[in-house]
Image 1 (cartoon, rainbow over the protein chains, first blue to last red):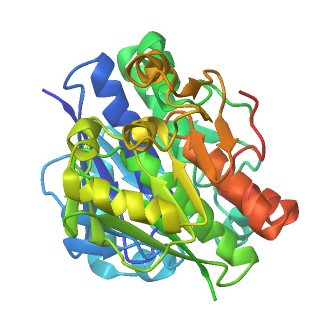
Image 2: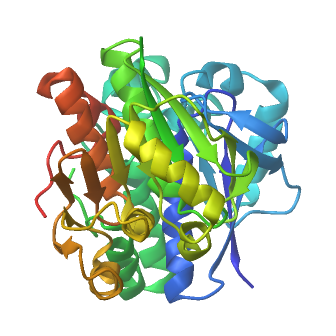
Amino acid sequence: MPRSIGVLVHPGFQLLDAAGPIAAFTAANRFAPDAYAISVLALKPGPVTSHSGVVMHAARLPEAALDTLIVAGGVDWRALALCARTQAWLRTAARQARRVTSVCNGAFLLAELGLLNGRRATTHWERCAELARLYPQVRVEPDRIFVQSGKIWTSAGITAGIDLSLALIGRDLGEDVARRTAQELVVYHRRPG
Amino acid sequence: MPRSIGVLVHPGFQLLDAAGPIAAFTAANRFAPDAYAISVLALKPGPVTSHSGVVMHAARLPEAALDTLIVAGGVDWRALALCARTQAWLRTAARQARRVTSVCNGAFLLAELGLLNGRRATTHWERCAELARLYPQVRVEPDRIFVQSGKIWTSAGITAGIDLSLALIGRDLGEDVARRTAQELVVYHRRPG
C-alpha cells in the first residue's frame, strides 16, 4: 500500500512549495515503486491559482487519514489560517496523519492551530522573526533547512521543501533511495543550514 | 513592458522542470516589478497532466514572439519531439524568441529540430550519452549545470532549471536581483557543475 502524501494548497500558494515535494516523492517512486501516492488538496477543489499565476488542480480534502500532510506556504496564508473550515480539517488531518509538515510560511498555519506550541520549528528566513512574534510559544530556529519535532517537521523557504522531502524519504525508504532521488533531481542529498 | 517567458509543457512533463523556472521568474518580479510575464504553454491548451500525476493549466501556443522560450522535459518527450504541429510551432517560436532554453531532457526537443547542431549543450546527467548518440552533431557537455551557446541555453536535470533561470535573470536585471531571487528561493546563487 503506497503511503499517501497530501499537499495542501490555497489560492496564492507558492508553486515551488508544492512542486518541490511532489517531484521528490515522485522521483522516489522510481527507486521504490509505488512507495508514495501523491495528491494536491484544497478546501475548494479544482483549479487553484498559485502566486505565480500558474494554476494547479487540487482534489477535495480527504476524510481518510494521510500518511504525510504537507502544508505549502503562500502570500495569502492568513486567509487560509483563519478559515474555520480549513482549521477544522487541518486539526483532524494533523491528528490522524503519521507526519505533519510545512514548507516556507506554511508553518504559520500549523502555528495558528497551536500545533507548534512548545515545539522547535522553522520557516522562511524572512519570516522567522514574525513567526516568533506572532506565536511566542513556538521555539523558532532560524538558519535551519528543516526542523523535526516529534511527528511535526517544518522547513525553511521554498526549495527547502525538497530537502525536507529527501529527509522523509530517507526515513521511509533508507538513505540509499534518498541519495538516488537527490541525484535524480540534481540536488544535494543534505544541505547545511 | 514585461519580458514574456513561455514554458512549454506536454503530457508527462516533469513538474519541477516547469515549476522551478516559473518560481524563479516570479520571485524576480518582487525585486524588479513587472519584469516578467510568465505563461505555461501546451499544444493542447487546458489541463496538462505531469509525470507526477499533478495537473497544471496551460495556455495555447502563442503566435506573438516570446522573449524566452523554456522547453520542459518529461518522460514522454519523444511523442512531443516527433509531433509535426509542435515542431512547426517550435521552429517559428525558436526563431522569433530572444532566447531559447531547455530544462532536463527538454534538450532532446531542441536537438530533434536541429537547433543544437554544432552547438555545445547539456541535459540530465543520465541522458547525456543518449543525447550524444542520437544527435551526433550536438557537442554534449556532461557535468554542467547549464550551457549557453549563442541564444540557446540548455540546462541539466530538473532543479538545474532554477540555476538556468537565475543566470537569465542576472543577465536581464543584474546580479543583485539574481542574488536576491536566489536568497528568496533559498538556493545557491551559482552552483558548480
